[in-house]
Picture 1: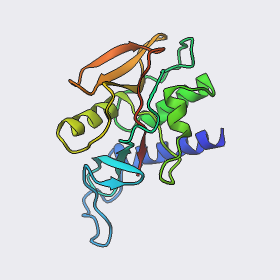
Picture 2: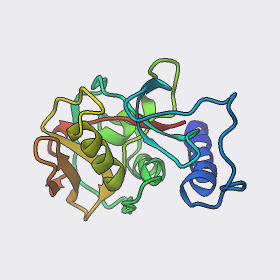
Picture 3: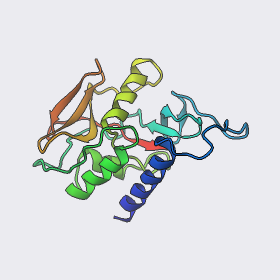
Length: 188
């Protein structure tokens, strides 16, 4: 529970400061002594698929399919209210899913439990985050992610959640007990 609270607090801080445009010094260029990140760069335990305007913060994805395929739920689908779709909302959705469903062998829990390359703050991407990963893969900027369909953390109903085809980019409402790819992401 402590890990979920810390992840939630980190998500809130990052969402407010990075993704909402409420950062101080928005007009200031990054200092030359600080790294500027680019899409497709290996960093922070994965591959960068999003960088904010400062060039200093963004999101990375595990392109090695460490988790493989999983169901969205623990068995019998329940309503979790993890309905956020926007960039920056995957961590919040994942915490909501795990708090509702508890431990188990399902997508959000496996992301939340992942320790990869020294990082333990992974989560299941929201619908728009997943779509951005697909777009970067389709543009040839990131490799890997070999499953046909991947889960998002965005719930549609008690029985369904959003998934996305990494073959043609189509989003679809998918039954939660289905086994689909899971790509974990994290904020840097």
